[in-house]
Image (cartoon, rainbow, N blue to C red):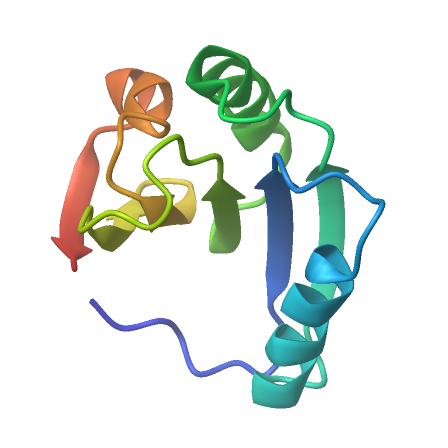
Length: 118
């Protein structure tokens, strides 16, 4: 799976990190270090801790409103610290990146995956 080579990328972030510490800011710093021209949209960082159902619902609700080729980063992970895989999946509307724990499954019910990497 290869992303298009345009420098301008739209990236959404959905997490259960909250906003009381520096984790969201650090994640954005890493993204801007990779691509200073990226545009980041915060969907929410207030998913209740480890609540896959709320994360899945909010992700599924959001994806249809973004243009094709958007990169959606979703991190809600009850298994943090375990050996679960991180995955990147290409689908019709763009890309989903996050843990392989079912968080993305609602989106894939509507937009079937085209390819995936671990």
